[in-house]
Length: 189
Image (tube, rainbow, N blue to C red; front, side):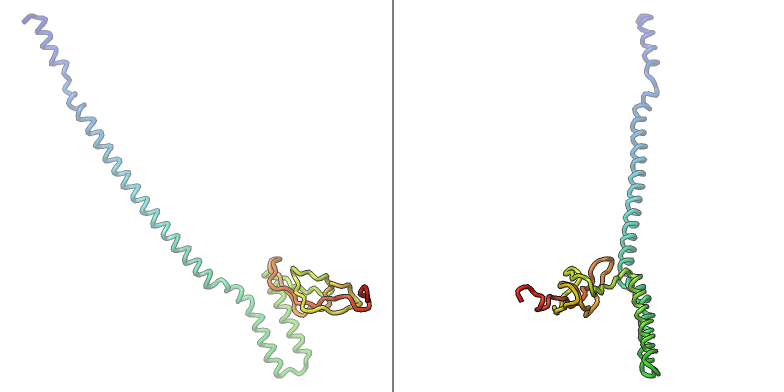
């Protein structure tokens, strides 16, 4: 062996890096660490999904209870507002038995009607009492026609039953009597 060969052979072991083994292990360790990190993330995401599902289920159940309560007690305020009117009617009925005059009953009825009107105003209920107005089939139901020389044909002469609107939507049409031409003023008579 020559000197050059020795230097080559001596140099060869120095060129082999002892950390080369750790380099081959390092990617495996790095992958194992990444795998553990990903497993932890998956576990956290599963936990988040379970919590979100539980929260959504709780919200659904709460909404169902709220809807059930709204159906069950939705008329509570309506009835509370109507109770004073009922009380007034009861008082009027008791007063009718022993009332010294009809004037007392009239006054009580007027107050009760005013209570009803105030109650309807709260609910945005409007009364239709179209006496003297032009007949409108959208809001009026003609019960009969009667001759009238004092008003134009097609005019409401009497209201048999008032109609009502709720927020400008028809609840019940007014039942009316409508004027028609008199026989004497009809053409060709």
